[in-house]
Length: 362
Image (cartoon, rainbow, N blue to C red; front, top):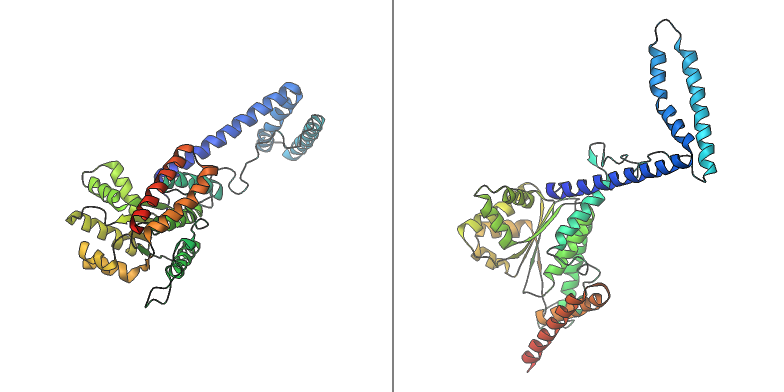
């Protein structure tokens, strides 16, 4: 499993800050207890010196250390019993003065057996969710909110499936992809006209896969190609961005085909597609282009790699009606969980789309 270095550093910083805060809280609680029962501080100091006193007795020359060690042991047990009694008088448990790790698996180090512990991984997942939320609406774009009822259930002449039946298959394929992610490399090509749900299902996959702790990079093709071009000029930040694109567990390359095609773009796209295939990294490409148009726009070599190694998922339906349906669904979520400004934007978009449909019908 690959981790984004920048996001991991942010996760570790938050992890350490929270641990330091817990330690500070415990220190303050101890001081409050010592103020109420000064004898507790004396006992703690004596217990902390026990190990050094045992070591001194063991290293003392010319004397049998066992009697002294036995005496120290009895003294230690007596101090623990006295501490327990004082804490009980205050209505506190025996371990009230102990620094008990929040995570019993790694003792709050963040790592266990050379691997990231699940406690630190939780922080990493949160940082990755924040990063993905900059481009995706992970709050409302999930598998649960994807409604195939917005697609027509009428079969066109010569078709064996309706748009709804087909999109139910696309939906099930995406759910299975997210559920089985990590078992083996797998790649998807989501293609079709705008407004058919490609971004929604991409976001749903990103949400599920990142929630398992896998590193996910979601970005538009145009922006990724810009970072590759900036890398040529030796910019450190661009170098890190390119490394993230090539090495993340899942890359979601959105809006392929909206950028200006140049020889450099063709080269960068081949580097991404072929490089990740060689490294057995999973990739999802989302585009408005048909597969044959990819060969014409980029190269037959790129199209061949995609068609040979990717599962092709065509998105079908009436784009405006479906987009309108999804926005109506999101509008219901918005009224209960989103800010008023976003609600206004949704209403404005609904009016605009309804006007467009009326003009088409007219």
